[in-house]
Image (cartoon, rainbow, N blue to C red):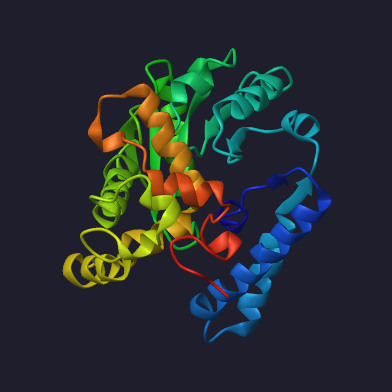
Length: 286
C-alpha cells in the first residue's frame, strides 16, 4: 500500500487468488481511511489518490514469473526459517542480477536468509511495523555481507515511501523487538509467577501470578504511556508469531533468561488461541 501510494509499481504475491482479493480489498479500505484524514476537505482529490494508488498495484500467485522484472523483493511470509530460505533460493535463480532481496522478518537472522542465495551483497532487512500505513519506523538491517550500495538503496527506498529508517546490525530482534519481546515475555512471567506446572492443566491459569493481565495492561498504558498493554500487544501481534520468535532466540542463546520460553504461551498456542486473528488469546474477541 505505502509503496504503491508513493508512486512505485507493485506486484503483491500470495498463495491464492482468494487471499489476494481479500488483501486488495483490505488495501482499498485502508486507503479510504487515509483519504478521510489526508483529503478531508477535498473528496475528489482523495478519490483520485485511491484510483492512482490502486493502478500501481497488481497481484499474482506466481512469484517466479513476477521476479523477472523486479528491482526489489520484500518477503513477508510466515516466520519460518526453512520456508523463507526455500522461497529466496527459488527466486534467486530467476531474479535479475541487480535485484535486491529484503526480508520483513522481525526475529530471524538476515545473514542466514541471505546465505540461501548467491546475492549476499544484495540482501538486507526491511522491518516495517504494524500497522504499516500508520507507523513511521523502518529498521534497515545490514549484514556483514550487505554492500554499502545495497544498504543505501534500502535506506533511500524507506524514505521514498515516507518512513523514518534506522540502521540496525543483524542481532536478534534488531532494536525494537530486542527490547519489546523480552518485555512482553516478562509480563507473561509476572502473570504466571510461582504457578506449579501441574496447575496449568487442572486450574484456571488466569487467576494465578503476581498480577492480573488486566492490571498489567492498565499499569503499562497509564504508567509508561504505552498505547497497548503487553497482553493486548501479544494478542495483536499473534501468540504463534511471538512463540516462534522467543523459541528461535532460545535456540540461539539457551542460557539467556530473557529468551526463556513460557509454558502459558506454549499452552495457548497449542490450543490454537493465537490472539485477535482467531478470536481468542489472552483475551476473547467477538
